[in-house]
Every structure is written in structure tokens, then in C-alpha cells.
Length: 462
Image 1: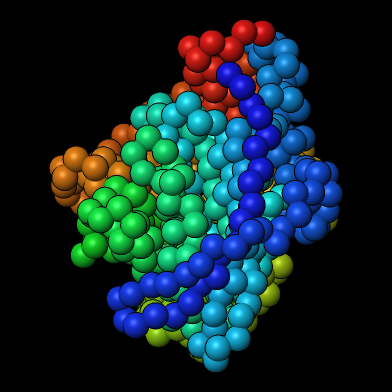
Image 2: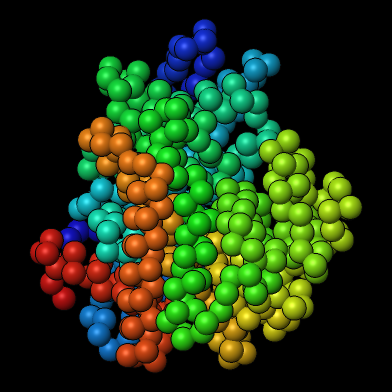
């Protein structure tokens, strides 16, 4: 299988139109086609995340049943596209916004979210695409390759009208990458159900017919999937329960003390799910900070505040204010769920973490150096590509629903997600026992072996 490093670039000017309309013009790209090593230097956090992926892949490549040469091959996506959108703001000014799409293999349909974030540059998106590549190849029901898209701006700087113009411009600029057996994106950081609906609308305008399967994570009223929104948080609890079963531990959920960093979709639904199972959620945070109550938080009140757009720290009566850093090292915690952003557990704070289990709700929250420290301390880390795969598993069903018009009930979605996550957890534990591996290495090896099998069927020889 060939892996050319295809990089293309172009510029698109997004202009406001009348309600329901859209106008824009193409211009030659203003982006230089820089060497990869130079583009990776643009953002230090993205570079760190990519370097962490590279180190993890190098570790997997040393295992006995991994063929030589696979390490270098898997480091390079098959297609990467940089574009620039000149967005017309509400006040009439123009603002240039860089965007990127990274796809790791074109021999299968691709999946992976679109994020709108000031750190969503090439290095960050490449790292996230590789993590998605591992994730979908770990789970046997997901016959996809990994991809990711980034729109490099803070959504808080834009009105909703400006965000709509930006997302529709991004869709029009990349519509030929989307569709059946191509790239099916989904929601991600800064990119929610409403944004997904805009993608569907813009794609419909281009094609002249509706294609609800072009993107997942849509609102239910817009051919979205019932049960998909909560599937990431629900999946965390399913993987944790199967982990206890694999360990031979008869642990009841109501006996657990849980801390959750991050109160976005994954964090909110994790809190809701664990509280409904009578676990004691003692700490929750968002980007502004967190609250802590050793006797257990009033999660329903915090969820209500979040729905009102208020940060969790604005009412100290709900708990003692703490920082995000303090939440990570709280004492008396059974399960720590980092569900915000990547790279929050590092070599600096790993020695101070007191939780017995880290259940990764975010993508890449733990650095490779921190992994080594946590393993030495006997803290069990349930890796992101296993733990938080509930959302992408449900997205698989939404794509089927959108392309075949076969509608799934919420009950079926939860049962399907649960079955797939339990089976994958069992496979990860079996591999870990047979080869004396930690869970992350076991999961990564299973994913890599799947990638190798697909490549061999496509004609790759080593």
C-alpha cells in the first residue's frame, strides 16, 4: 500500500448571504507547503502530542510479533490537506482561518472528529488522527481508518452566524473528501451537533440531494442517532465494570469514589451515568476550575448550571473550589476520569496521583513518561482507545442509519455499544495476560496487528 505524503492547499473566502443561502469564492492558497518538520514546530503542545504518539508506536514496533518497517510506515498519513478560509465577520472584516484534514489510510472509509480550537494545527490533528486510527482498528466492529480535521480558531471568538459560515465554507472546500466510502467526520472539541447539522446542510446544497450519513453526531431531529450523545460517558462505565470482572474483583459501583476532570459531553454523561449507578462523584471541573465535596457532589445541580452556560465554580455552595491540577491529585479517589484535553497527566504530576484507576475519557490525557511512572506505582490505566470508544462505536451505527435509512432505537444503540466494548476489553486483557503487557500496550498491539492484516490484504509485503 502506498503512503505518499500528499499535501494540498487552497484558500476560500466565506461571505455572509441571506438566511439559508451561502456564497464564497476560491482563491489560490496563501499557505506555503512547508516541510513536515517545519510545520510541526508551529505549536509546541501539538508537537508534544505527536512526539508522544511516535514514542508509543516505537514501543509497539519492538514487540516480537510486529514485522519490521511497520513503524515508519504508520507514522505517515496517506493524505493531508491544508486550506485557508477567509471568513467574513459580522462587522464586515475578513479573518483568515487555517484548517487541516489528516487521513491515515484511504483503503477503507475514514472516521474522526472535526475540532474548532486554537491549537488544532497540523501537528495536533496528525496526532489525533493517529490515535483514532488505533482506536477504530482495536474494535472489531469498526472497519474504518483514522482521520481528523482541525479548524484553527477559538470558537468563543466567533458568533454563531460566523461559526456557521466557517463550517459551511470548510464543507464546501472539502466536500469531495466526504461521502460514501470516504471520510465521515463527527463532533469533537468545539464542534457539536449544531455544527454537524451545518455540514449536512452544506453538503446537501452542493450535491442537490440529502445525505444524512455524511457526518455523525447530528441532533436527533436531524437524522441523528438516539443514544449517541451519551454513548461516550456510558461506555466508560461499561469498560470499567468489565475491567473489574477481568480482574476478578467484585466491586460495586456504589462503593466507588470518582473524580472527573472535564465537563463537556464525555464528562457530563460520565457524571450522570456514574451517579445514576450510585457511585459517589466527589470532584468535577471544567476549564475554569472545579469543585470538591468528599461526601459527594450534587451532580444534578452542576448539570443544570452547565445547561445554563455557567461554569461549575460559580457556586461555592456546591463544593469547595479547587483547580484542575488539584483535582488530578486528590486523595481518597478510586477512579480518576480525565475527560477534558490531552497531556494533563505528565511526569511532573504522575508521582502525586492518588487514584487507584485512571479511566481515560479524553484522547491522549496521559503522556508516555507518566505511563511509566503510573505502572511502576501500580496504578491501573485504562487507555483512551479502549475506554472512550463508545462515541465512535455509536457513530458507526449513525452512519449506517444515515446511508440505509435503517433507524436504531436508543436501547439497541446502548446494547450494541455495551457488547462491543465488553468484547474488546476481554480481548485486551487476554492479550495482556498472554504477553505480560500493560493495558495500553496490549490495546495498541491489537490495533497494530489489525492494521497489518488490512495492509497485507491490500498487497503490502514486508
